[in-house]
Image (tube, rainbow, N blue to C red; front, side, top):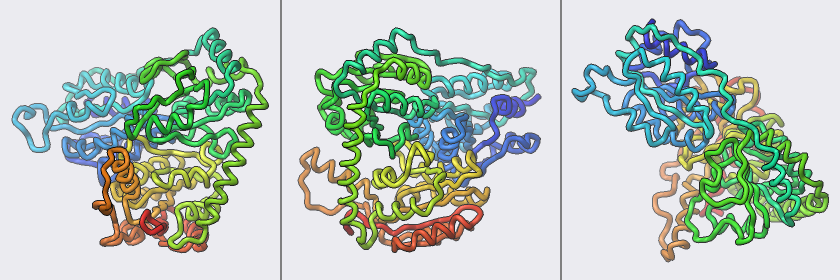
Length: 547
């Protein structure tokens, strides 16, 4: 058998049914052989980074591994930023790239480079198959490492001549590996005692709560023990229902802001994440001096990684949280305080937004209010709204009615790139991609993929015609570094020329509508839902300097 057969047999044995890729010359052996593997679909993209972005969100949405295929050194280079996003999202992925013939490797061939070295900084393991005899072992090991906690991308370089070599080493499955055990009863009892003794406990939940299918168990623990739940600033998943009385919103961008949220609590319970991801440096501690800290993780790698803790427990999170819930005391008084606090916050928010209701251009909040009201209750949200993320949280029932898939790492363009991957995983659900205009331009080629494969994605662009997040960050920079300035925001406007997203979509065979009045959003959404396949909805909203 040939190396290319062993490669594809390895994918098949590990349950892979989708490859997201951008074809090239060195991928010819795989593409040609795929004709004999009708159970593996090739999802075609016009840019390697977009293919990786789709594989990243597909891995999250399908709860399986994402496979993306790149083309030699320039193609891998195009994809590095999106691979980094997959690493930060802890998405299990196999990233492959066709490599030049190893017989001319030292002669500096066209498109040749050290692919292993290029990928190594942004993956868990980077390797090149040097002979077809290695293919089976390397692929089995790649699947194992990609799934090992915390999961993430693995890179495998596939030289064109190696794919054509003969080997007697057949593909094999890496096995049904149990890599996460259960927490000890003793440690869970210690955690319960700390929660029962605390005056004001609080939880910070990470994406692994969803990956471990522990969302219901977290809600049960929160409701019994009367503990509010925060999420981190940027999340790939929504670990706690955004419409629940115990949801305490997301944390801030630095330790000072995190301390403002957590500092009054005498017990902080960190669950399932890489705590904390900061945007800005602040000399503060995220906790008060006398705060006790419990950390529960799926595996030991993240325990006490960035800070000292009082108790760390590794174990499958759904099991750990369910058993912990049985051990904690009922706390109705704490539950009532959280309910009263949520009601007060909702009333204050309603007063603030009422003042902004009739602004022209409309606010992102108003646009998203109208959008949410017009969408079906089971819509799946692929989100890269960035500065409008708080408005998305307030208008959608994330983590409960609405499935949520977000992006981590800070690299923009992942939302529009990833939405087709979500649609591949959920072909019978309405996928809604919410993105800013600047972010969408990093991966606008994804519209063609959505149209080509007739994917059910409603692309919603919040067009404020600026890089609004950068303007906020300029304000932060000037304040934090005492860089007093009355200068304008440099190179952050997208208004000359103004971009037409409906025209771009039309050029890729996708219908759309541009809407500037909130009362017209419902009709446009109705048209989108009646259309079979992708649709572009360009919502004109206020910018920072048009407020």
